[in-house]
Length: 321
Ligand code: DGY
Image (cartoon, rainbow, N blue to C red; front, side, top):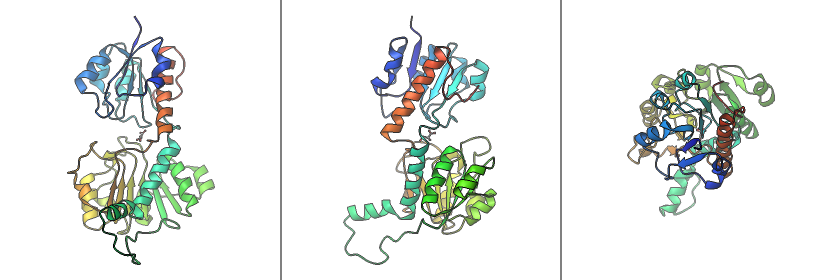
């Protein structure tokens, strides 16, 4: 019997073809809905490998019920949906998709910042709704990006790629990170700052940190209160880094000017989410790495990691050694 691999979302058949000869590969056959928990657990019980999405909780219960599971390849750089401790106890390799998505995610984050600053979504809606009756000097006037100060929380590879884009726009760059980044300091002129200093001095606060025990709930009422009233907050990392009701209140009270959000505390959100009632919020459905080219590369990397582990080779991007 061929070892069984479960893919938790419908992916293009051709991406999975390198697995098909040696393995029995089954996919959850819906592009738009996550695999229900019960089905995931049932499939995992017989799986040697799982190709998972960031929205699938790959938790202790799943690991404990899956005696054959050798590898979980997550289609994301973040792996906060996976219980690494349980994976380690079971000796299951966990792989992610770093590097291939760095520039694409930095592009989206920069675009999100521009959209929030220059009110692109509001302006598009204004035109579509037939409200554009004349040109006027301050019509949909936003705020500048060039020569402003951006504070990047989380200076990993995506943070650095974002900083390169910011340098191209003549921005002053501050960053806050677990460790100093001498190369970014030298080549981009980025300056390390405490979180407090970054929040107080930045015109744009951009969150690109991974979700960990240290970053969960990092931005609360107090932190929004430290920002400039003209500040624009961007989150393209993970929703739970931010206390969303504190963010909502800060926007309503004018403690900050606007927000661009690609991620939310609980995803997906629906149209009744309070943040969507605010015109100064740009909301995206977690599409940081979503270009066709990059998503295909991410899928191929997952396939290569699964193959490597099941065939006794070293996977390219394993997060637990
Ligand atoms: C990731 O890969 O972790 C990103 O959030 C996807 O957009």
